[in-house]
Length: 60
Image (cartoon, rainbow, N blue to C red; front, side, top):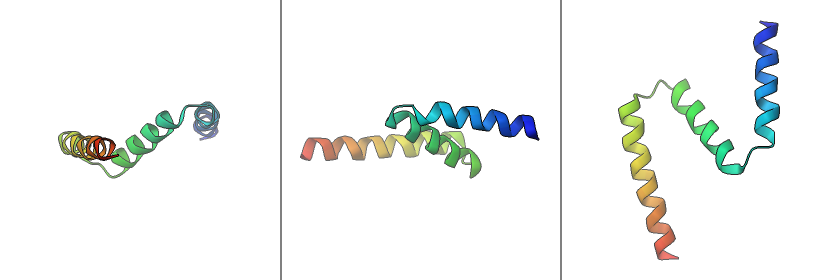
């Protein structure tokens, strides 16, 4: 238990200095894994999100 807490703290410290896109990616992975989202479903959803965001960039 203590070893696991220490490992989490080290990961948190490393993440604190990470670029924003890495932090967001870690958060999204955590969300998908904790909600046991099927990998194929997640990949399809990510493609939709990517497409939507790309359209918003074009519209700017």
